[in-house]
Length: 77
Image: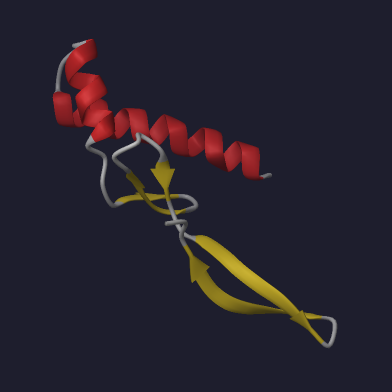
């Protein structure tokens, strides 16, 4: 389910920050997390914005004649 994928994303965001910092330093990890940009994840490409919110595209679908049709992606502004 989506909660599993979101948990997996959180894990990978932390791993990415730890690899970029290269040491156990809480301040450096905080800064690395805030600087996360264009990280490929299981749910799409993720970036952390200036408010420290995660941004990633959301798939949009619509139903036409009872069938799912992929419309595209949207991201909050």
